[in-house]
Image 1 (cartoon, rainbow, N blue to C red):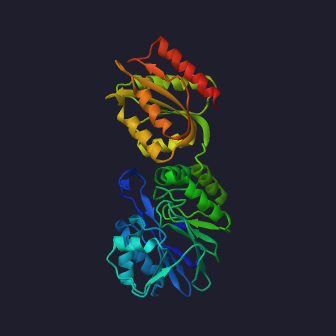
Image 2 (cartoon, rainbow, N blue to C red; image 1 turned 90 degrees about the horizontal axis):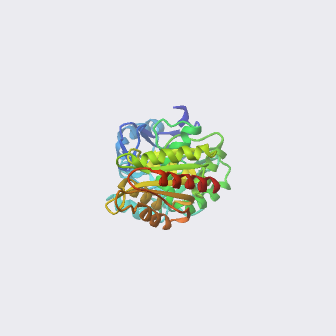
Image 3 (cartoon, rainbow, N blue to C red; image 1 turned 180 degrees about the horizontal axis):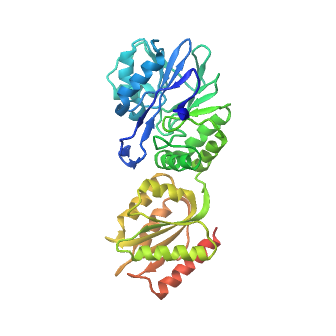
Length: 390
């Protein structure tokens, strides 16, 4: 696969998983996912991470083929999460002379996952340390909480390759570049790493000081061209900036009346010159995609029916995910519906007020069962306010 070719001496040995339904048991991956691993061939040999247990057999065959009869000298452990570290013990047993390379937080985690005797087989590295393989030299940079505390990146100094751990990864076993990469990479980043923007910014500063010709993540394609595009995307996502001026209308409707209000608001916004308006049905859209959309636009309207003295569960789940992913720097409008005691706006406002730099515009729109003249007028006022705030 050309997109996974690195150089003549750095080989891709990862595997594709086309049968996985939910990544981390929560994120739909209709196009599968890759578990990436790399072999560096020099005077010494090194493997950059293992793979998920679902790909163990194929991965070991790939490793054996890449080594072509040679022994293994080092296994570099960038990230201990089981989709990358599941085969550490198996590899260590198959290649008993290989040393495991990790940092101070790596090896305690290895002991937690495996009953493995590593006496005399560990190489502890810290920020800036190097490891010579011959012509190739690896330099290590700590990237704590991107998105586990032991994560580190490795930079190969001769061929200028950054092994970026989960950074710059994507869902999708056959993700392309450009817009396709952006969408799946954004859904991956914002849902998995999104909480840790400060830590990602720190890692980006380290990467900015390196001459990088290719980025080798642990998921998705190897990135070789227009690296500034990918770095800029990460800068935007990790600083919680919007990618697009526009309005996402997140709708949680039970019987359709709140949905009708969301559609009418969308038309009102468009009539006021707002070209980028998207209505997202939270009851029928996976929350990971809804989260991605919320981060994409600079404004959001939360429109929900009242339910059990609060908000419809699809909205509550969505807002809880936004809170967990550190959602911030947005303007928010509220639309509630209720037949006898509409309280969804109050509940939604409370959740948004717990987030950083969120401007909730007033007043909220209240619908009693179905749109009428008064609630339509309130929708018009909300459309006016939102278009004035852009």
